[in-house]
Length: 196
Image (cartoon, rainbow, N blue to C red; front, side, top):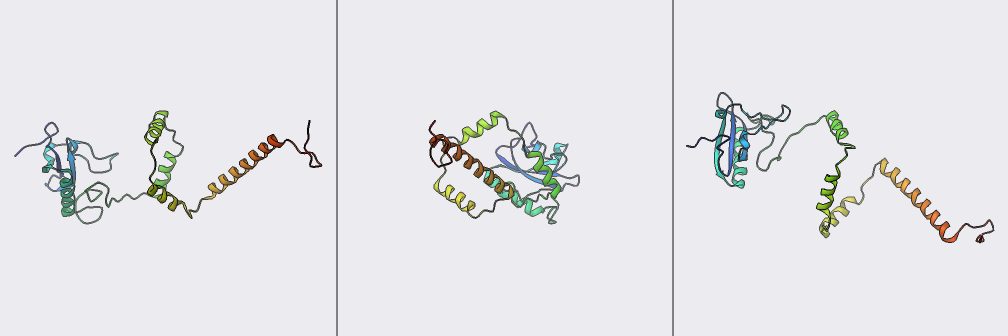
């Protein structure tokens, strides 16, 4: 039997469990490299990584990624999830490819805070350039264009969209009025062209 740790992780993909003092698991995960020894909780939320290596148990190792996904789901289903009331694990998803059956409940206040924090956030020129370069030269397929058209048809736009449409219409009217003046010149009260 091989003893794995951060300096000697298992080869390939593997399934690991974080154990309580009584030996029961509180978290099941799929990893590669040193994933099992990395911190999982963010700002105190999520499963915390145990202090002691003896509480990190490698259940299966040397797996393909697909095999690891399947076994992770099986172990989570076997032990059950606390958030769903089916068992003892702190996992927030069913495992497999990550976020399946993830429960994330946000209050309206939290949603508002997240929205206001992201609203108006300026992106660096470097980020804008990277995004532009990644999209430059790409043609969307007819299927993608058809899907976008289908989504847009009948979409009800909010009051801001109506205001924007009105401003745009007025701006276009003014532009055409100026253009006509340049092309034909001002018109006299009798309807004749002023030739000056």
